[in-house]
Image (cartoon, rainbow, N blue to C red; front, side):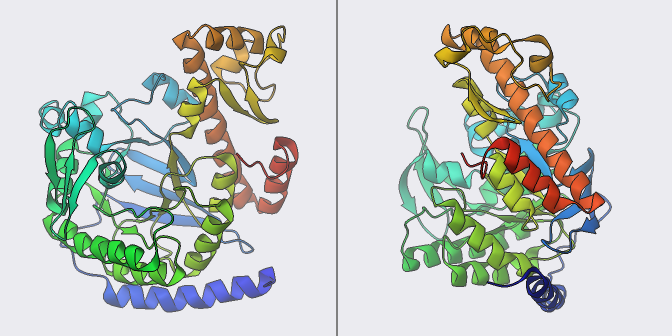
Length: 406
């Protein structure tokens, strides 16, 4: 096992080599930088964890950052005003679902997502690729695109890279994703390689079609669980990196140690002058471990999904409030939290709401879980800036319980 000193030296050397190659290969996309810029304020010397600021047309984003997911142009059960108060700097919406309903043309006529959903801070949309492959009944995948059936009414649709970008441009988010093929965990090497190469070919088409400088287009690194394919995907992706880079195809069912191993492999090879986005990751332990491996941006539906089932993330670990032991527990959900839920309600009341299927229970727990993750990331950022990352993470795990795994 490498010592931290040796690991630090290796990261520095490989970063320099990769960065020089990246600068030589970066393509001219005919877009300017007046809308977006990213500055790394401080990097932890032992881990590579970074504190930065991403400047966007709808405001600045302090990183590392957790981004709540608003699949249908709303974060389920949480008012926008409460999201802001909780510390949300940017939220996500889903291209596939909004294309299906109400239709990207409707959103465009409304003035774009910001006006449609009354959210004046940054928004990120994915390309719909993951949903096309996971929700739609696949009929045919070709180099041209993907033919699939709607999960709503069975109607036939065809997504090409150009179609995905057009939909995202109609939605009008600040940050959009390239159309990619997210291969399943368990794919053999040949299957994963084919998906990776198709993603690379589609990436070039996405960038050629994209023509809105006020939207930052992030390419996505794929390659399944194979290091050689991840490295090759990154090499093919680097020339298209302008405002940020995403890592997809992780947290899709693989054991977490495998994800961490791949992030360790990629960390010294990733560009240093743009934000790095790990897609679909949002459990407390993964947020910490990802940040320690140089990731700047995260998103996941976990916070609101488990809230609807009566589960909360707290400073002392997971709490399932529907359990009988909380029937007469009149203490706050989390003594260390000052969110609206924790300041005003008890575990007994939350248990009652969840067990009688009152939507208010899910709303309160969703607000708490999102607040909890924002505070976790804010604490990590302060630890990076203050030089006490190791102490912060050790204290979090000590209180949260072991490794904090979910």
